[in-house]
Image (cartoon, rainbow over all chains, first blue to last red; front, side, top):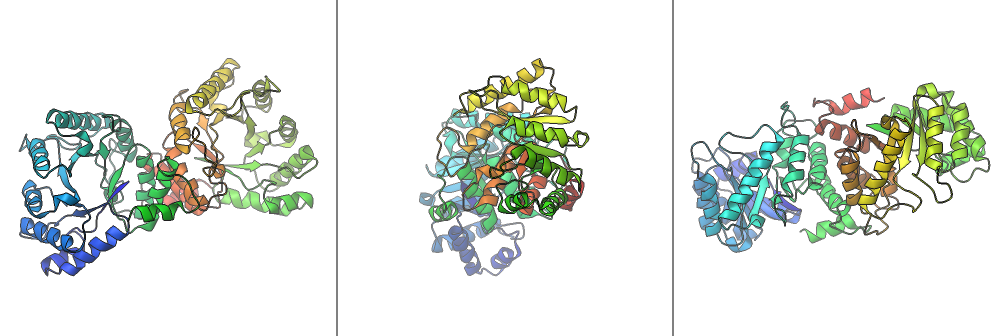
Length: 274
Length: 274
């Protein structure tokens, strides 16, 4: 399981403050602690408060790279912010571009642009692709799968290895009633997406989004994660400080036959993933 | 979710002692506490210690029925013990016969016998059918599904409503290495069994069997249960005193769209299932 740690995000008040005060110790501590907790990759999101988003992205990346070599996940809805990040990121560590839709109303070629950016960043650059197109997030399972299929085929067409794609079928908060996009529909989409290519493309989700505003965040995240992992989800942007969640990841990997059972399987998982 | 509570079983020392000393208070307290904890049904298993298994089954049933009307699940590998139980059980409450294989080497018609026993016990009698035949428990997914299909078709042939079947795809302990029957293979079998009839036949498992002898029993049970419920498992023989497990059941039902999210969804589940 490729856990992408979510905490270096300007949405959190400690990070927001650190960005405003250029206090890189806060960022570096989060980078090291998340790596220690089992993160394979660190999400980096400047949030919305910073005036200079491009400069802030670069400052965050440089601050982290001073202290650890964990791969980074450059997270922004603005391609220019990701492009700015790519100028300073150490691509030898691996880098994930987060994220592109298939298309946007305003920009038909946005997916192509991201593929080019990833290609330009070298062979260790991967790309999160959202199952949404110019019509937005589809309201049913079939269209999510259809967009995922189009993402995979467009990648192949452009000579971009589908193994470098992380397809995100987009989980929405359970708290917001939405008849068409219940979590069970997302699971049904995952069940199909895992067979779109062989070997399967990676799949990821912004897990915490699911439990946004609920009373049982960790429990909801954990249960969904186990169900999703049993349908090919092999990555998630998540709270790696949630030990219960990491233990569920280890248990699911064991039950899905990706790790052999031993009485210390939780410790084995923790030690091999840090 | 139809939770069948596992604790009234002569395998547990308190029950074994209560049986030996004919101390019905112990049994009655377990019956009431498990019902209060959310059991839809109480498993009743005399264990192996009692000399008079038939008499003990009747004594257990009569003791429970003095104090509560929760449906009972008569659990024995000996049809005579189940038949003895059926003589005293209040079938108006509902009763589950646990269990029959499709066939046994020694007795080709064992499945037919159980169907007849269930029919004779009236319309509220249901039957747990194991996906095993005269060759024992199949070592792969396909044969488990094939046996499940044969169970459903034999039931239909005999005019026995498939809705009265609880198909048990048989989980084995993760601690015992078995290349062919990993938990992920059982999940793959469930994925198919749920489509054998419409409406789907019930599916059940002896959940605690999975974590037998492991260091993380509740965690392993919980993670597997969530994955299995997302593939149509709608019943399990389980430890209903495990609050974490019951909370996972509630969360899975919510995520699978069987219960609407509210901030008190765990309490709502608990109060509607007790």
